[in-house]
Image 1: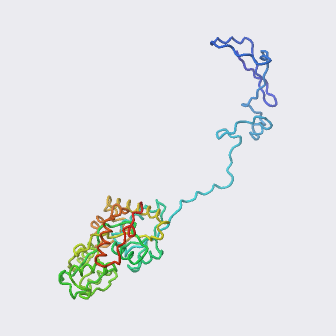
Image 2: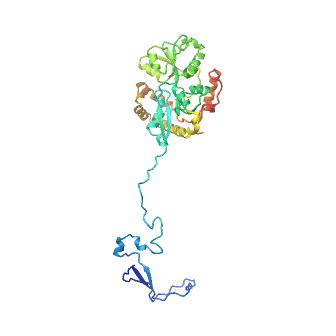
Image 3: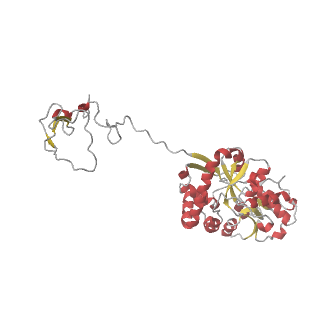
Length: 392
């Protein structure tokens, strides 16, 4: 049998291995014994010197652990991640982790913050924009006619408006295109003083709120009632509808939000009659849409897709949490928290579009045909020039 005999320590700490006599014969395994190497095996009892890596002299233990291996042909170990020749050393401070890139978009509302803008504000407050690497600057215009002009000149990236105004802008050659729908039903209406009937508008003063309210809605009202443009007066109220009605400066307004203005006037003790745009012969259209600049669309499309995804997630959260969403909205935009808005919130919430990117192509084609038949646009524009689904 093999026996290991430890010799006294030598300068390099070597142990002596002695092959002892009396080695038992190995049992036959059915294979021929291997041939002896050339020159034969060394005689039994030959001392073999092997390094003892488990022992160090006292001096070596306190020195550089690699010093004991200097000059040896094989080195102390194989250089692998688990047994490196030398320990890894970090030199200098750790490089900072670069923050993810952020895409900035400026978005202008169609007018003052309102419940119809809920998806935008909720998406911002729930960090749904930032989670997608977006920084969205939501701005309020000083004039409701400004957003489309700023968008057409690339001074903002996105703007809110209504579908009828989009058709007029494209007919005028403006490079704007619909990329999302926030409210998929008409919001506008004709609100009259309760003492005035729809059939007796001649000689009355009916204020309007925007170019599309005058050029499309008012024109449709006149056609519906067989009146000429000179039959009534229609001042531009610049969205100051409630004030004009309370002060008696107008007999009615066209373009007012149908679920909001009558409620606000009722709180002031003023009774009114409300007629929807469908009542006066206007086809159904998208009440609130998001427009982009067509000339910038190639570079902004990815960011727009991400923004619209955030709006869809925000809308779903609003529907699932109606009370919490109102509280979040009121806290984020205190100006929204009025008695009229609070009372109208359930109806406003039900009108929010659950799939903002989806495009109702037939609706846009039908509305464009309607405008062309009424000579409200110079030519019929193809749907793909008016609106797109940004995911396609």
